[in-house]
Image 1 (cartoon, rainbow, N blue to C red):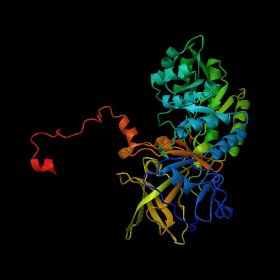
Image 2 (cartoon, rainbow, N blue to C red):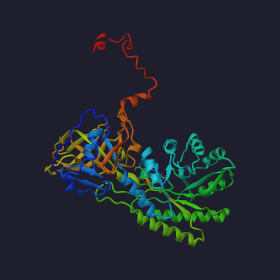
Image 3 (cartoon, rainbow, N blue to C red):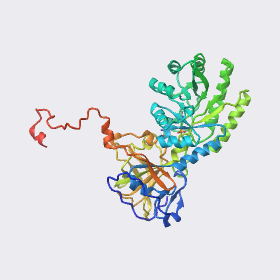
Image 4 (spheres, protein in one colour):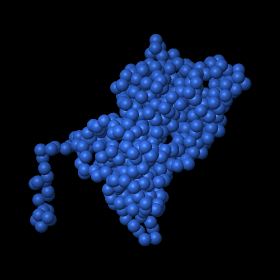
Length: 487
Ligand SMILES: Cc1ncc(COP(=O)(O)O)c(C=O)c1O
Ligand SMILES: N[C@@H](CCCC[NH3+])C(=O)O
């Protein structure tokens, strides 16, 4: 990564979010910009003064306006990925997996791009409902959906509920009506272990999702659904995991799913019209990282399903795919402020920033690697390995184990972390009572706040025992030694 010389933009400690002014005229620095390839968002350049300009907007200026840590999401990148998916999967429903990242703006963008929405909780459903997302393009997943959320899905008119256990059949049937049956898909476990981190591999027999084809569980649940007039078995669903970089496991899963459709026809005389092949398509998180090309996957999946169906004398089902990360992962960049640098002779250096595992738990959870770079100034200092750590009280709070960053990185610098659009804010916590960062959209050279920073007042607002008119004076036990009392 190149690091060029330029001014460091100072940040007031308590930078209040404010609307950015009109986009600046393109600077000389922008005119001599160098393209930033993946994992950075499309239309991102490094300017000659060391700024990262995403679709014409300055990362350093956005950090100045909204404070750090800050998540930036390129709207154009998201929209282009939606379009790329629709082009790559003609005639196929593309349902964005909301679990990757959701806020009302994101729901609007994917709706406007013609995608459906795959939900996995009542909270996600509430966001979809808040923007009036058409219910006929909503699906609800989950291996253990709380009855309250099933009821909410039912009253919102969610088009398809993906059945994931035998217990769920009756639970949903009692909520539905014979007159207006609930359309359901059956989630099968195809018995395929794709190459990815074990915590996000969901296609094998050894994990909690879906119903095993091999043990006969899937067929038994299908039979139960077929006996419930309040439910309509519309099709089969299968999702083998996340961040899978090759087409092979998806094609193998599709073959098993079609074989299962033919088993259902032979055993129960039903020909199901829908096949949902889930998401899980990998993106590059570091330079040179492997991504799965939607066009390649689309072409191969459609050919495979068509051929398998022809072989088994089945009509071609309507297909659905559910990309999450592949839509929004590379659209996101997180900007941090460096707060401390420590050198340990023989052990390298630590660069500590003002966020960490609470806004991006992926490195700590999965050992995930994310590209990281100095932004906002240039330098001639040579790159030297560093461990980039967060501000949390935990040794595992690491954002990058070995990042080549300029030797002169110092407190006040800005660091940008790539590919943080998916499963970062969505998995963020308030660990150590640290509020979650704001999210700003970048569109046409401007940053616009979508979700504000979570404040300490927000954190206290849930504490029902908090009484702001009562302090602790006089609450100490009476046998407390006086000198302790007075310290
Ligand atoms: C059922 C289902 N569909 C879609 C997805 C989206 O996965 P990804 O973001 O990897 O595309 C997931 C998450 O892995 C999922 O569980
Ligand atoms: N949280 C995971 C992805 C989980 C996929 C959801 N089923 C990650 O960051 O990689």
